[in-house]
Length: 112
Length: 117
Image 1 (cartoon, rainbow over the protein chains, first blue to last red):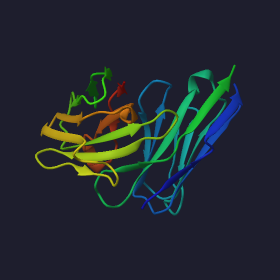
Image 2: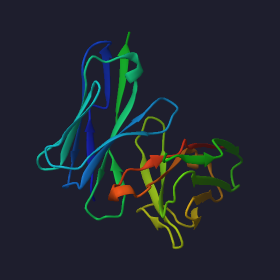
Image 3: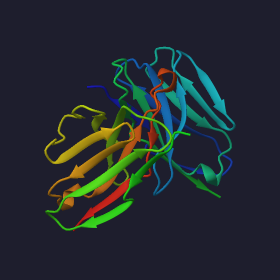
């Protein structure tokens, strides 16, 4: 079945350093979504990418969707301690069921 | 907008009992809701798709007789863990899609942490 792989699993950075997490799907996606989960919390929607090659920015966060619509990345510039959490990508296939397949997540720790 | 609530937030029960978890969309109607399970330090695993007015669709490996889903209205879905055992202890999260503009964006409830003794 469809799989979404995400790397790295963990990342420790010094505050101010950049951070990137990568997501790869075994199949072409209709769209990809990114969520952030703080420790003890629930996933919170960040963004959705739909178009091939799409790039979207939210302040220090940059999201990219690959040309083949099978991979995506989230890049955080100049991390802050508030960026701590687990970032999940979630792929929607073209079956129109609304189902999302989540990647394993990347847990970010930021040292002040 | 797009707020999803879950109740209870935390439950501790004895082995063999059943536990019901409610998922409500507060400011929108949702014909479809999703139930996930998340073990510590792991990703979200989709258990089932809850469809208003019809039977839920379960993912492979999820026992439908153990995890009963009822989607009785456009704003409420319930998950009942029947005859719970310690291995059912987990974080159960629901989500709903407002269905705006044909997007698949899902909004998550705050989750229910189940501990089975």
